[in-house]
Image 1 (cartoon, helix red, strand yellow):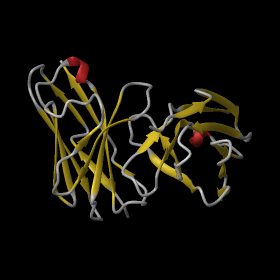
Image 2 (cartoon, chains in turn purple, blue):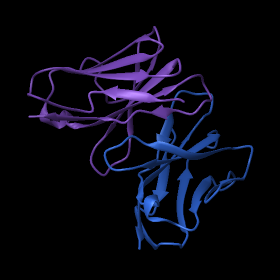
Image 3 (cartoon, chains in turn blue, red):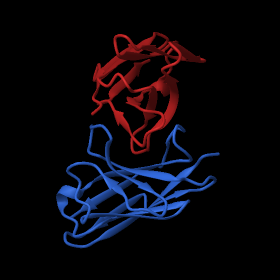
Length: 115
Length: 112
């Protein structure tokens, strides 16, 4: 139980285009989903927290107009990287939580490469 | 805000020996301390967690200790095996709040 999937697992896009990453909780309903970014050999940095049906809360320094997050249902959150640039190339990981106080279940990650 | 420091950044131990990874946190209000294992190209997996109402928790070869006074917690892996090789992250946060803050990670290598 408590499986989180991400799609796609890898994506390559050209500079200036947008790319959407999906995060799904497969066997539970997640009231909260989190998006992290991880550069090579570095830690996970929280980008934003999203609650179903409400606007995402972005961490300081994360551009909300560039990283669009939609949490339209209790099992799906999407991250759209708009006008992607090579410096946006990274490993993007989502996690999901059933309720406050519960552990976060992490997805397998999405490797984004912007050329 | 919370700040989590993790040491060492790399650790190499002989198969069968024990490995210890240490973390310190800054916010005395934090009460939830999970540990994650991340293999190359994959998302992190929770291996054990501890809450501030206990000082130690054990699950087979893995144990975590917490010292709230000193604000540090440690991961202990005994009888290490090759499959224990991975990057390990500690984290800290409030159990009722939204987010947890990750340490910088420890790359553990098990020598055969």
